[in-house]
Image (tube, rainbow, N blue to C red; front, side, top):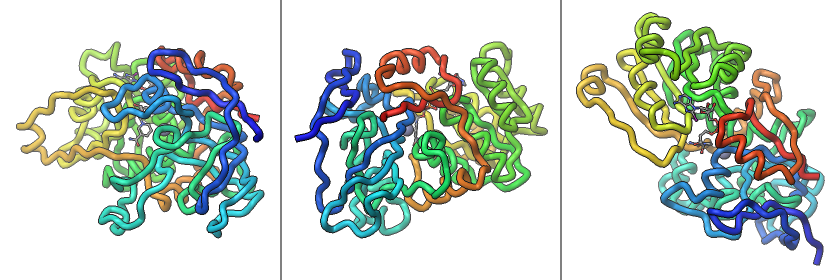
Length: 342
Ligand code: 8ID
Ligand code: ZN
């Protein structure tokens, strides 16, 4: 039996352990992938700490932004072949049969399995993917740069779509981390005008670099929502909140124009107060948005392959995973960290 190195969560309170695990064998619909790069998403940190009401069961291997090459396939696999470049995703698989899968909402499938949560993920040198669901990486693109598209990219692309904004309208991106800095780029590529809010001037500089016209620092502004309202001539038409802090959510609602929509994407395990009167009289829409379908993923990767979005990332070894998580907790990461798994 051959073995591989992987970063393993043994408990929600211990550091991850770099361990030798058996290389898994693909089932009938699965492919075995040699992982070359894996992005590190804040969701992996929530998973490793057991932050959410529905918890993964240790021991497990996090990671749902893995990109690599197929090295073996199960006997029912037709969609991918040995040598193809593919990735894993949060939507690792879905049932394909429920009312959600049948109506283009496979991301809501109650029987879905999630990469790096219910199924071991990409923080290992090999991983399994369901060949019916895995994203295919376009030819010619850099695999390390493609990794952040597999979760951060598709999630913000879908989150922006469901703001129901039009080209020329304003969108607010709240939280300019791994997701948010890519959201700024998709929004610009989709013809929206971008305002950005974060608690850190370095993150706001990154937002400006990627095309934000208005930036607000939530810690130094006396009235962040009012400032955004004024700078956008009456409020943003849409907003996407990726911040990992419940205070950011009512701020984004407060920045909306009448009739505006906010997509909630960040997942701090908290609640926030919603003013009923304003929501009703201004006809606001507050909606959640979870990753994207396989079609959203293909579209998000296509924007990337055409050079419309270009993640800012730093490549680090897998052995750094605990340091990377600590830096993420402290908000010290610029864009995304992508681990070199080879
Ligand atoms: O499908 C989904 N809904 C989905 C997909 C992927 C990730 C949701 N997520 C969730 C993650 O689980 C996490 O809760 O989105 C959140 C953001 O993930 P990330 O972008 O990978 O995290 P990050 O790189 O740490 O960035 C967080 C940013 O939030 C800012 C930080 O400065 C950082 O730039 N931020 C914080 I913390 N507090 C803020 C505040 N009050 C804030 N920005 C504005 N206002
Ligand atoms: Zn993610």
